[in-house]
Image 1: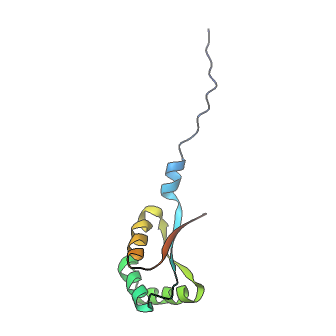
Image 2: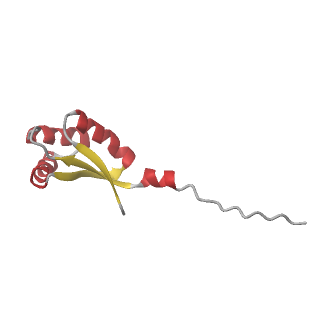
Length: 97
């Protein structure tokens, strides 16, 4: 006698997909923080050169926001936290590949 079950297996990909998602660290413009303060934060926290940080600050000021760094969530989260601790608006956006 044969016993047959109709079990459907759902792959456990949700957790793995979140860890590997492509994200952007967005810095937001405001009327409080100076160019120098934002530039210093980008250099110290994101490892940008002075020229890169200056260009990012100009774009942030003119467009209202800018993706200053890209990568996975786990690498960007500490940077986002450090930037916001300095009083600068920052968020992480998940993007489609």
